[in-house]
Amino acid sequence: MSDAAISRAVHPWWASRRLGFLAAALVIAALPMMLTGNYWQTNLTICAINVLLALGLDFILGYAGQLNLGQSAFYGLGAYVSTLLITRLGVPFWAAFAAGVAFAGLAGMILATFAVRLRGHYLAIASLGFAVITYQILLNWINLTQGPLGIYAIPPPPAITIPGLPAISFRNPVALFYLVAGVTLLVYFILDQLVRSPIGETLTAIREDEVSAASLGINTALWKVFAFGVGAAVGGAAGCFYATFVGTLVPDAFFITESFTILAMVIVGGMGTLIGPVFGAVLLTLLPEVLRGVGDLRLMVYGAVLTLVVLFMPGGLVQAARVVGARLGLSR
Image (tube, rainbow, N blue to C red; front, side, top):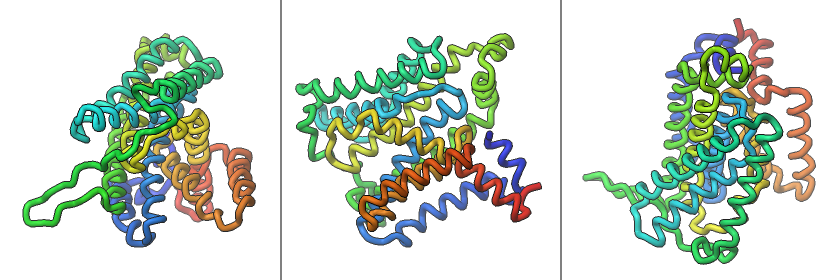
């Protein structure tokens, strides 16, 4: 279900874009005050990083209809490119961040260029193969990536100094969360503008029927490359933040299972919407932590939640919210 359909289905007050972004900003500002302690504030930053990953994949899968199982590769490329530029060449953080995002986006476009004629499970296998190759490079190119030995002492983003005010140090977990969440909100806004523009309509046409879209004069190959590039760049941004957040890089953080976790976030939240992957990422990041007190049983509960959502709410949490809104009389 598209964002536009959801907006038509709910009360106009809830459909207001400005109110939605204002509410999101207020929630982001309040969360560190509500969830105090280093443990939960750390998990908030992980949530923001996972939201970036899910948004990037949803743009490729939910809007362009391309089954990409290589998001973990773009995640890792962004992390390693930015980290190597910072630690080996002394490049400033934000320049390295831009380079990591650009490199991941370029890698996504190159993959799409070679796989542009593939569809469905063939594309999934090709993108999964790309993820495997990337992981093996990160693991075995010891001279460059340090392989399983890892890269340590990765510095946080430089502090921001405002005249007359104390410096904002991103060694503080709350400040780092605000930075990552702020960039995530900005990415959401940009993607929201894209999917509500003729670009979004073009991608949706390709997703629904690629042959019909081509018959209307749409260059489907070019737009697939574009979608992969944007989605991969967003994944690369998440990787850049992950590296500076953790302070240590090892290839296992970008193993192919990470791609399936990101895919689960998008499906559970609701493909083809932007707000759905946000909720899906938050749920699947925090749920294991909330259930940690029940020991190994948490894995069963986690699996049961995923299964029930897929079986009874194939539209994900967005569909569930729409059903609840209809029963409460919030829909037209």
